[in-house]
Image (tube, rainbow, N blue to C red; front, side, top):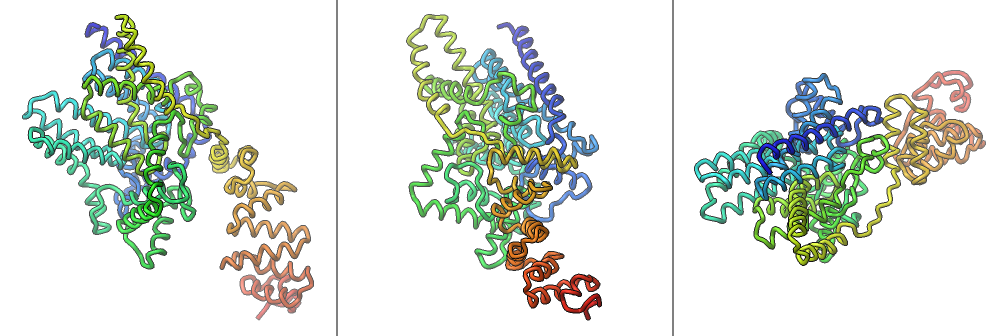
Length: 592
């Protein structure tokens, strides 16, 4: 391939990548969650708005990785907070990621491998899916790939000139860790491996120095507010416990019962439980260490469970299934025309990428930095828990090995080396069995309907919201959040049935139980109504109107003494309530 044809082919790949990404972003603008962001996206967006309004410091150590929030704040200042703009920036970053993969592939195995790897990454559907979100994933991808490119470039230069490249790799690697904290393991491993060899100790110092400079602002910020050395965030222990506690059988995201599944409450819920168990207030750093030790104690109680769970997480990491986070790509396709195209999924990269890796290892043609990255990054995810977006940094290197495997197979076919082709096919058999092994991949989409319904509620489209909740309930009839949301919106005969189910699924939800009791009282079922209101009082709650409702219920049951007692309590809030004065025994006169 001539240099001119290689440049032309690269331009075509990048043009296709850009066209797909821009088309994807522009065709999902009617998606209900386009401007009503869910979970992590909403959390980062709210944080970015606070930064943009002048709240530059958090006031306590970072809990979520900070770099994307500050980057998004800059985009909001430029665009006035428009949510299309950061998505278009993500699309451009996605094209940069394709270019970086092409460059790394070319440096590693030659121009054809680089071009094919770039083409595979350009049309990977999960990249498009993540780039269409207001989320940190794409920024982390670009910084991770840039780090790898800088490391590979540093090895190609004389020792004196390479120092700047090593330092730049450390600095950019720190940036990647400020987006995805677990990337720090790769940076540390790079320093350690380089320090073990006499001829690369200077490189180790340069990488470490660059990383230290990159991490310094976050570390200083955390030290100022907590007085402890927290390099990036104070949630490592919480994440470890989430992925390892006894209630998590599979290694995905499964928070313990005392944590609400939303970033808005996760930090405070973990802190409250740690403080309760410790019997004293803990600092953010102490809370993180507490949950580290709790996770380790949980695993130590069943010695075999830790290794089995770790292997299971690695299996999830390299499985073809796209494990959803706050949005499910399988559900999202109905709103995204570009994702309904026959684009390659992770299965292709898992099988062919691992086959290419094995071939490169057998031929001793493996780039050490890429191998170290695949190893350490895989371990860093499996230590905690697995989402599909967490494995996306692996796709670029795997695409390079997949392209290498395919092109080497094509060369073997052209040269008539049928035995080599057969061996390659045999290698793929166990990999297919691993990557495509049967899993319970049934998608109920109940949570997806919940998110869409919430978005409609925010937009005051209550009929559409209730319809989404009903669709979700048709899939999971006992879904607590769907029942709660649907019960609050329903009217007429349907409301009572939903309220009854919602209270059963959310027994400590005071608002639901209060409304259910009111519905029962209105229907003249005073005994059942009183039971609901008394349950609320047992929770230590006393919402406005509860004593008045109990007074009416007990009056209807002929329990005059109880009715009078609650009427007097109600009159402390509303002394001119004629009905309460009557039940209390004071006629229409106000209580004294």
